[in-house]
Length: 400
Image 1 (cartoon, rainbow, N blue to C red):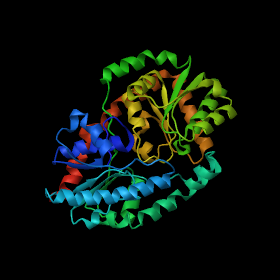
Image 2: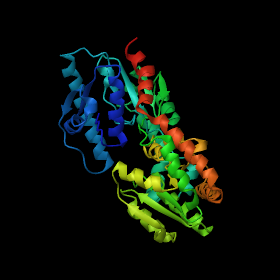
Image 3: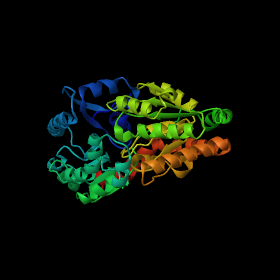
Image 4: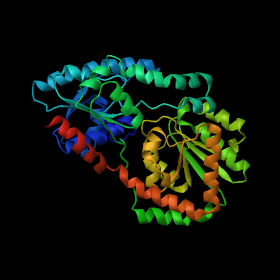
């Protein structure tokens, strides 16, 4: 795996879940040499035993990445053989790559093993795909995603590993169903990201109360995520347009970078809202927290995330969310923390999302209630939470 205390996504998950394992086990960590160096700078993993692997990081199309990962899987099994010559592990836990599509052949090691958190089984209902305004090639990819998910779960690099596991942790119900269908006999669901609150609840709410008078003057929306079409920033732009056409003085900040960024910029021009959009590249987490603390609504129409640290980050700032309420966004959000609801078409969702925000503008007290629910819910994404999950499902699976 590739743990890194300074990164989000898979690397951040790997670091947090290894810390949780350390509560119960003496951990031996197989990782890239660059990951071992990053972890060595942290005081949080002084007791980890590192077994680094030196491999050049892949660059290029995703298929190249999967070929690189196939080679990595072989390196992992070789390292397990080396470790067993010195110690007798009670078992193996695998957390990254976060998808079930390709896994090291742990079933051939003779050791007990657990997997997760694994995701990747999420997909968009076909009706929504066709209405979402994706470029044609993206639309085709998303229409075929459910079939690809099923086929890859039955691949020789996945099915024997899933079916031979003592326990699998899935990030969502969709991924859990695919793992069970592939033969996994014991599966549970846990949200994988850890975001510790930056401020206490009273401080967060004091700041939000000072903002209630700002909503009617101008509501500030924010989106933060990779520039991939399925992350849905083009739908956030449509919400912005709908609000402005309805008379609301709305603006949108987009904290993003990636292949869809140029397409989204063209979309903002087509919608006539480019003057009300502010673009940022990725920023350090503390700077992101500052932007979120100044915003009023986090608009995040991601369509099939397995999980996302973006939503807990918003909640720790007491920032309500507007999401589709499916996949990882559905797992992280609640009805009380904003408008987190699926609609059968993109146009209907945009209209309903805009109406929810207009409701907050008309009655800021209801927005403040959502802010408080968000801040309270942010406490659910702590390191203690995943330590509890490890204690409940990993420990009994590896130590009868």
